[in-house]
Image (cartoon, rainbow, N blue to C red; front, side, top):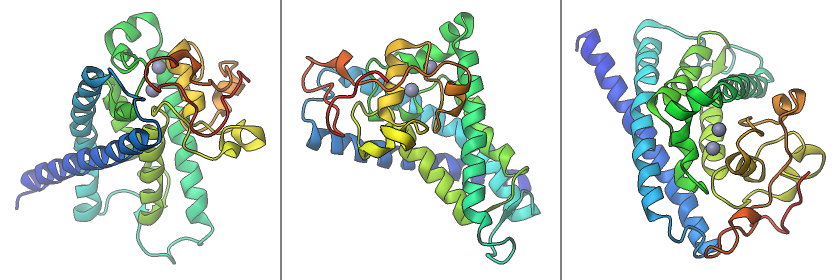
Length: 260
Ligand SMILES: [Zn+2]
Ligand SMILES: [Zn+2]
């Protein structure tokens, strides 16, 4: 196979993998929502179809740079991805996961804030915010330009920060699960993750839902660090804005939260 067709094949394979991963993750959590909070997404069928359409388009946009880099890793020895556990000290594996999550969070926070500038918001980020309230299917519902800013992040990071291939799988899993659950409309995680000392620094649905309600706050992805540093953290929401439509609005993690 020529290099060009191998790259095309790799990009197509990555697109399928990202698309199927999205359908399984969002589908799984949408099913959990249906079981746990029947009627939570009542009346949102049209919005959900839209969310799925944008998300599958994003899968192709994510798949291209990922496919090129995956090909280069295998065929040309590109990237700092390693697969031998003795290549780096074992303690480095969890550290590398945290480094990746922190780097992704920083990239997301600042590009996300930029996308809330009125002109960019209108043309690009409004696609994501058309989900009111978002559902588990909104995880990758982005305008292609926004998807492109997200698509390049990991393909660039693997050239900068060494990571074991299993640790990279952990990073991708965390991204997938948080992307879906942050939009799900109820809290699936234990209370300590969104309340108290640890919750004060982590982002889950209670925090991101408030971003979808209020727009000008809570821009982070995984951690509240940048929001707190920059004065954009408005605390966690309580899903109350969406009460009264079907069962929507109940905080699944327990009692409704108060604005922190
Ligand atoms: Zn969102
Ligand atoms: Zn936003």
